Image (cartoon, rainbow over all chains, first blue to last red; front, side, top):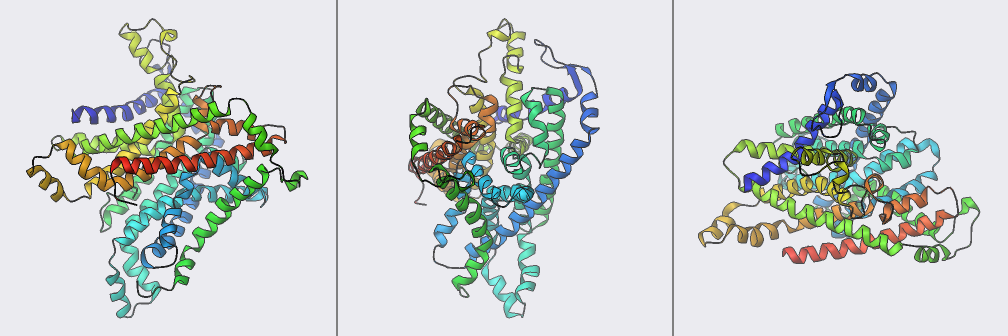
Length: 261
Length: 293
């Protein structure tokens, strides 16, 4: 029974990906046929040969890296405050961190959009980064708080007693222990940023064109072949980022299990 | 916590406070102001409640609200149940390790998959000429695409629910699996020596100990399903439409007079979402038997 449940779950998640791979390579998919036939490479050539694709790829990477770095930096500071200091409103703050995730995103992003409009059109890229950070920081803070709480305070105290300044203490004691958390926070923020469609479209005003932005019309018109190619490229990109994070996390001292906590 | 002056903590929190205050707080403020018809850019300075009146009188508002809540509650409850079930299987299955590894990788792939691709997959699988329909035809169970039930662009939102569950279940399963795996097996061993059944251990031990994580994740799924635009926009019917799809069509309406109505609908959505997420979270916590948060 348990085997059956796990097999079904794995099949439902993995088999469609196989179908997508086939659809990117075979053009004919008339009704009763279960699998597509007639090998072509036109879909891949069209996508890989268009300059728009490379623009979208670099925009996705740039956005993801900016959002990932911004999120992780913000979350590192916030997690330190929440784990190491007693201050008025600490409990409240630890709940409020998740607030952006509990507000229906349509309303949330319209709010961000009207706010960013006040700063002028030139700030659309920064606006998109900030909007993506808004929905990534809750995850980042949660992850890093978990790692921070796992580091005994005594280690920091010992380092201080031995004459480490704040910066050195961070670099030599905290950073190595936090590294897996930092990698995870970065990769999840990257993932969120790359997956977002609505906020990128709304706040970027069409000027920030990412891979999902490129994909949307293909899905809307149900252009299977091109959509499949973009889907595969996207999955490979995000899979690589995740693998990289997992590699870094495995090298660290702590368990890699806490994917989202 | 010896070297704690509150000031350092607030300083550390300041980037987060700035981000939330500016975008979340500022955004909400502008939404409320514009919903009251106070839009200086359009030379409107009189505060009125007319947009709320128009909103509450608009046709099908409550039907759409009900539809949205149905989608959100259905998606989050289904994902939560399935996620816990899969996490439990992952944790207790021991023998074919390969199956455990493959299932874990599949769940991770499910988390990586963006919603937009989940929409694409759903069209490929559940459309009238989709994979499921083709397989049924091969077995001679249906006569053609028209005989296959309309699962996407339908009134019951089956396709939309499928997308949310497809995305929500791996998220929930991985979280719960990680939470359960970190619980010491001493408790379960003690329960087993007292002849507790597997289901009893899950219900009385593992779920309550993970209740906080489960409630948190389930609330996120609820709020996401309530507020997502692209999923109901691509897979939904015209009527009933989800509130977020309705909001989006108001927002992009060329008639600028509709702006205040769109903002009023945003306020409505936020209030509805906020109160429902709270109620849902509290009920779920009570049901799961978690300790007070």
